[in-house]
Picture 1 (cartoon, rainbow, N blue to C red):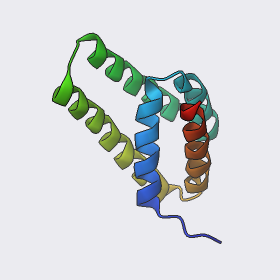
Picture 2 (picture 1 turned 135 degrees about the horizontal axis):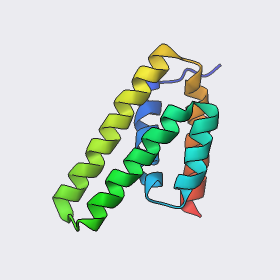
Picture 3 (picture 1 turned 180 degrees about the vertical axis):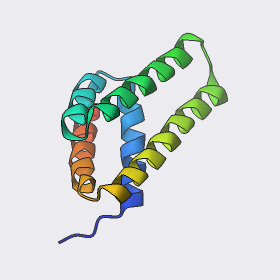
Length: 107
């Protein structure tokens, strides 16, 4: 049995969730998170999407936009790390979801 490094899974999930939030993958991911982890995760992804799209609409360029994306990634990382501490059984689920997000983003 492979050891799952929770911090790494949380970091990778956070990066992929934020990348997917402004991509067509968002629709699949939101439904998947809601079904597999709970509606709170689906709602949180929607909030991330809205904040990211709002940043784009305001035309925030360069560093300000990167800072906003980094803040979203940091929030997701912390949220997911805490979730895996409370519910270790979701770590393999997140790894599977990450793999699928990566495949979908490359299409």
